[in-house]
Image (cartoon, rainbow, N blue to C red; front, side, top):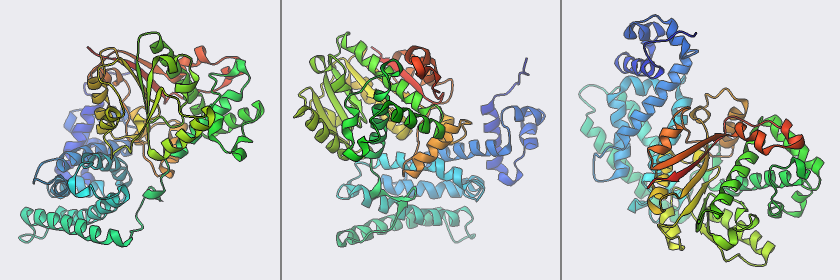
Length: 494
């Protein structure tokens, strides 16, 4: 039997974190942590293969603490408070700030800091001075102010004695924030733009239709396989491609080649995604026979469940929620297929992080209190934790008891880059190359409590590989299914 230790992994992290706050990163060692815990260094390596792994956890914990500083109320202006909180953190937690921002840990600081960025941006979606700015303009204002705050924070981390006081830093932060905002607002009408990029691409160049088209291609390829090998069939996926692209989706051999190529790049991801599609299809079919009256597909992309599953058009009012660019292509394609837009589907264009989805839904006819199926497919991992909480809170508040959420999620180690799975590392890099970020995951073994604490019950957690025997027949039994994909079906608690 493996040895049992009298302390947990979290206790090691908390102890090491306390030591860094007291003495700095340079004096942190397994020996120091072990001494504080009253043990030898050996058990620590049972939880962490190296100090680098422990460092990463400490940066994550430090960023959580930083987020707490930046969301405190210092003034009556939340945007100013974010900047002041950043400076206060650097002044108060000098060892943490200097260690997290040095060359050895700065990549982790940026990775976890991106989640803070998205969370704070979400909190400012109704900030009055930003209401007349585009998303690109807001991004430029915020990034310019962050560069100013970051430089000021380095000064605050080690200020000259008797010169730089907390009050002076607060004043400079407020004045600087105001000057940056006013200055940019004066320049925007002239068409002036900073060449500011996120993830290596200009923010204006992020196209939400790319991922939607990739998933449509996966569905089209699956539908070309011989019927005994298909996990599902989607007759409409091919319609989202132009004539040139359709030449790649003509034969079963072409489909098999695409699936194999995808599998070599990201082992088992294709198998997991087709499992996800089939799993959610079955939930839709269950709801059709259980008195459901509404279906909300959040991040609908080029999904076709509203058109290809028998009974949906007769029994459900469907709301497809997605970015306006994606919605524009979707409605045009559906019009071409059916010579008009089906009456049972309402298309709700929403810019996540800017628009209030609840207001948009209600404004488009969504009825609170009805038994509703909510589908969040390929969505949760791409939005900040606070946005996930807000979404789940809306679902539990706006629908009747026994309404259903069906979604997929990743383990947290996929999000922070510590997963040993090749496909997790490749997917993360692919997402970042597309100027996006994986933001939300659930720690292994905690998913049931996560959904239970957010107002759900009868929680069914399913791993993608566990569905292989039920869904994969014929030649498809040889396909891999990645274990990083997990699915949940849960009911809204009474």
